[in-house]
Length: 156
Image (cartoon, rainbow, N blue to C red; front, side):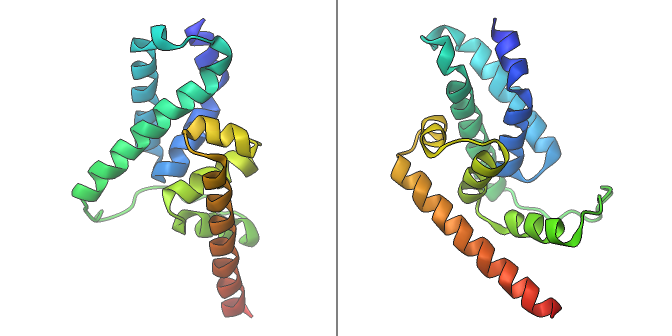
């Protein structure tokens, strides 16, 4: 039962971790760690219908732990060996602007616009009040509009 539920939301978990960490390898590690932690604590889940928010919260906490550790150990890569996929100019600008958002703003934007979460579902999954979700959405939209407007003005 656990495995089937986990497989059903596997891509969602990866997108959440990617939104927080902005790094594919760390996102994969975070999802793996969260799944292990959830497996160990599976007896604490009382209602199987709450698996997705429960798992999302575990993953969110794991990502926050990684971000805290990252702040303690900052380093600069010497060279980048990753392959960059070319996106259309507007998508590229939006994605670059999203990367500039703080993780707590980036995650609500991803959950809402990519995964279709409602305000209440995000609040439940992240363990925060609905008012906080709304505030973060508003802040993220405002920052994105400013960033995209500045980028657009530089082009024109």
